[in-house]
Image 1 (spheres, rainbow, N blue to C red):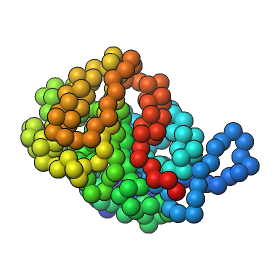
Image 2: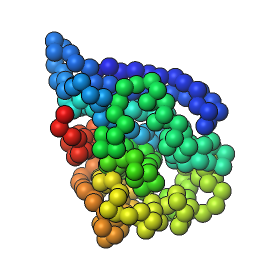
Image 3: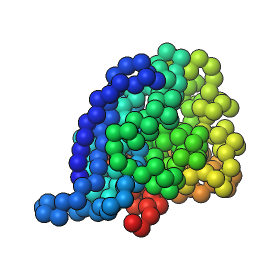
Image 4: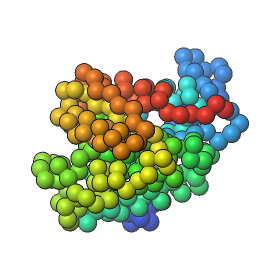
Length: 254
């Protein structure tokens, strides 16, 4: 695999930002690393970080590069600060960035597939919210969307706002809007939606909202895979469960 750090200017944000990208590389003589590559542009996973993280954290704290190598999967990890992947009142146009500008930049700089059936999104905590937000707002773009320990009930989090985030991101209540994942379930046709994956540790403070979201999605006819197993809001859990997400992705035989 190749690991690239890309620093570039974002017109949507009006500032320089970064992403890390893992790209499949045929390397038959590399010791200790499996490699699955073909002649076609590889499928791509947009892998989103959490509230206190940046674009480097997934590769620093998990073995996602090694896991992706076995699948021939490209992984794009953008940097979005504490934005909750939304166009914020004071934080910047981060939804425009991740939904429009980022995929265009990735296509310009890297050779990855543009087909919906080869495009996936996943994330942890704030990034789990961002992943399901992306899948439900852009069902035509993604074949699958996965959340690990996701901050999924934004209305509940906004009411508490223990981290002081939402005053900078939202200038009105999120409940019932297009920022509310529960509201989006009533606006998206389950037949055209991506497959959804919801996973959370049973010792995690967010497990209740994860259970509620999974049940609500299933009740409305969405294709949902979920799992609630021992674990807390920490990297040992995410390093283990990202492997399950990758195994779940509907990767085409190439």
